[in-house]
Amino acid sequence: MLATPLLLVLASCQVDPAARSTTEYLTKLQPLLQENSLLAERVLFQASAVYNGATRPDEVSDAWTTDIVPVAEHLHHQSTFVAAPAEWSATHANLVAIWGERANAYRSISEGLRTADQETWDSGRKLAETVKIREEEWFDMVNNTVAPMGFMLDAYP
Image 1 (cartoon, rainbow, N blue to C red):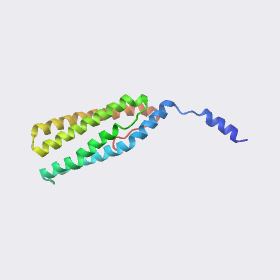
Image 2 (spheres, rainbow, N blue to C red):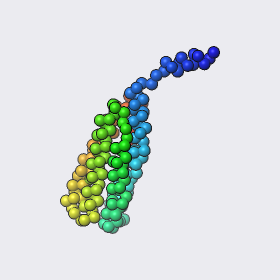
Image 3 (cartoon, rainbow, N blue to C red):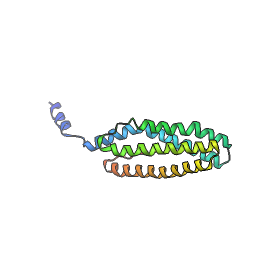
Image 4 (cartoon, helix red, strand yellow):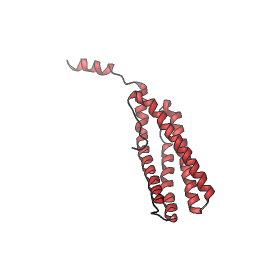
């Protein structure tokens, strides 16, 4: 007897479709956000090593070539495989573009370091700064959208 009223209550509790698609999208992003966090950690580690004079120029170049650029490129590549729900597809396409531009920026920085080409390094650094701001704006926009649903997206979990 108790089962019938419980089923009626459960059947009447429907999840908001926007919350459902948001949950789906944010869940799909989680592995990418872990990788984004790893990438940020590697970039900060290199910046710290350079600032503290703890590394030689060839070590910095090697680190960018082997530790940073491959992660940035992999993150961008993997982000293209996320099948975002329709209401999130344009937003996700923007994130994919941002992460692609960052991978290009990091590749330019790496190339500039490897070849001692100041102009290539400068263009990569400037693009990286621009992309960093766009990424921060993307996360701010998404968080403003999902906050009323009780969600928050951490760029660096």
